[in-house]
Image 1 (cartoon, rainbow, N blue to C red):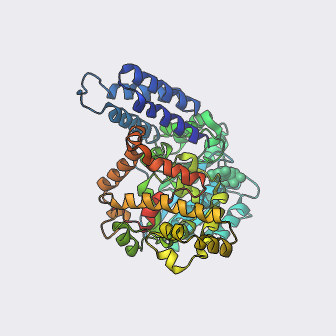
Image 2 (image 1 turned 90 degrees about the horizontal axis):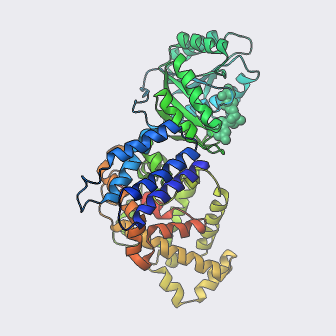
Image 3 (image 1 turned 90 degrees about the vertical axis):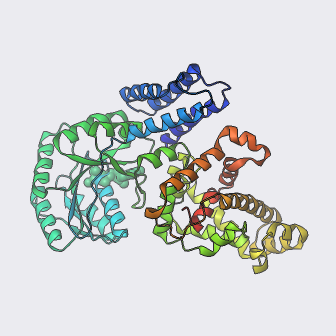
Length: 508
Ligand code: GDP
Ligand code: MG
């Protein structure tokens, strides 16, 4: 994804602040120019880029900053705040309410991904226990009903449509009435694609809207059309009351910036992003975590939520041991299992501090998973004594016949077993470091609602600090979290550093 390049460029520009001996106007200007160049390159609207630059400049007053103030941090914070503003217009999205019908109407250009995204949204709510259904009010495109029907059937979602009725207004009205009567909570109306110039289709959209009176009109925007997004977004929000936006195809070669900045034209918040054709390629969008992920700062909150969703947080025992600095091969094995269970690898990866947005897309997912499986096969050939040993590395180096036995048993080589052990050591070191971090592994309840945001922020900051190039230098030979992450990443194992804490999951 090209957004990954944007993230990398901004990170590099900010990183240079750390290398400069003195931070003055010149250094700030150079950094701002680099950031703005990167944003423009990613298709972000030039007016917005200029505004961002002015705002950052205004927020930084060298004269006012006391000698001892950490200018670098202040500038970083300024950049992050402005980037967040860029993708967050400040309006709150519609929050559906349980026990009552919540009608969503989808609008957008033909081919932007409405039908696909309807199903994704329905599936998202269904997984969370809402009574969910889909209505096909697209009579314009041949085969539209079949497409929705197929999607809905696959995901076991109730649906409504007609092969004979040609008036979309009637279908939408009937469908919504029927599902309301049946007590459905999330009612999603899919409409036909429109081009900004097609006045008749716009008229039809307004009629459907008047007929079903949606609680929320969702504008689906295809990121791959780049700068053109803005004009489209404006045209739609001028004729219907766009309550929220879903950006699709952020996995494609789309530069992304066009879509992200077009959101400003609607004044409506982005609620989800689509990152692929599959029903699972769908992520809730929140400005702060998005920017943090873009800059490789991770999304601890998202991780905690994911873990809770998967029910992987039931791991008291591990937490207790981590607090005592104990992390065995078996613990690592269990972490790997958790990773596998959590599904879309790439989504998880991009939430882990230290991993850039490279992981917002699937990339080498297949390869990473098969790597993990291989490592697990090696561990399958180990004895209980080895798996549970507090210092497995020492055990193996003292009695090298163990290496040969495990290699033989798992159909691998001694070198591969050694590699596994060295990965384990690095992994364990990071996990122990996290374990000793104040406030990471205590607390009893990790429901994200109960997670103390201050604590979360602190953890994020600690992570960011660990990745700060200057701090890394100070840590000298130790290499720090980032190096370690990179190594894991190279090994195709990525992310266990973060997942370890997470699988155990007491981020409170
Ligand atoms: P509609 O005309 O607005 O209903 O668009 P569709 O839902 O039929 O989607 C058009 C095409 O875009 C289909 O081939 C979808 O599989 C594809 N598509 C939708 N969302 C995404 C996405 O997030 N990523 C990618 N790569 N393709 C998508
Ligand atoms: Mg469609």
